[in-house]
Image 1 (cartoon, rainbow, N blue to C red):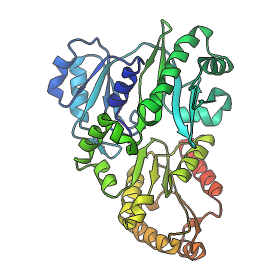
Image 2 (tube, rainbow, N blue to C red):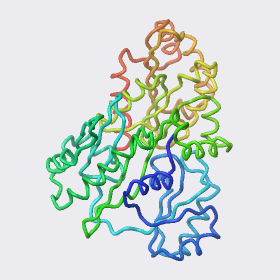
Image 3 (cartoon, helix red, strand yellow):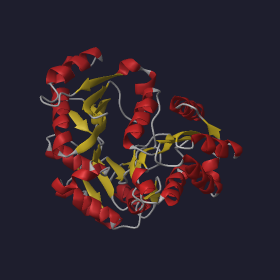
Image 4 (spheres, helix red, strand yellow):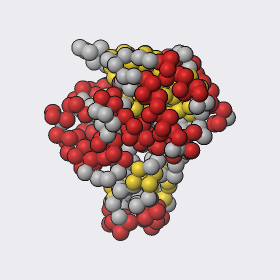
Length: 385
């Protein structure tokens, strides 16, 4: 489950990581009183569990409380990235000198720390286009992340040594947060360097393991509140779709968490990013293949940031010709999805029959997953160029 920004920042704050002062409001009428103790200018941020909020108009600047209230009124009750805006975070705007990137995550069963010289909007373009702009640090499962490892990475990135102690402190705190919160990802982007050399987490993306809610009552309560609402997350939950928005430009329809993470890493290595981490395993096993495909393709088709879609299934137990029939039925109902480049990679049980069905319908079938990944990344780059 991906926490909302203000929920993720609360977790960071609990672990001693500095975040901007701010308040969460649910109505425009609350704004004047809520901002009484804060200093303008402000940043007004729609609280939805999705990336790319800034480009979608969900993050705006306000010179004073009155303008903040107008922005709040415009955001609340509307949708952003197909998600309803029910809360808005208003924060004091920071005087930023430089934007950095910092994240810890589980990668192929191992914990890693990513340090980026540059952060902010479209950070994946830095990672993909300039391999010298970031460093990946392996986190020892017994000893954790060592400050010396962070300092070495910062040295290689050419970051001012005066920043090393503060950066190392934030990185090691973030690394301790990962197991403590049963998180699979804790990302700060941007991590702002202020004029006085201090660091401030301007945004937070924290994804927690749904299977660990029995020992994380705080997150279990958030999940219960979300699934009680008639929104996208409730629909995903009902169809047993594992769905974590990331905010990139490439859609993925897949089965299996391992292959999903592999495709995610591959796409980022080539300089792009998935729109969301999606796993349809449980949906398919519970007999909900067609409605699950319909919902995921609907979300990807209506997202203006998604420019290409990969459909990847490698399986022995599932009949791929049946899956192809379900895909064709769903795609036949969706003209917006069909307008976006689609790359199919299906290998396993009755794959030749599935390939024949898809090719007969005019779709491209890739013999290797790498071909699909590279083609989708090229398409996304063409549109953004």
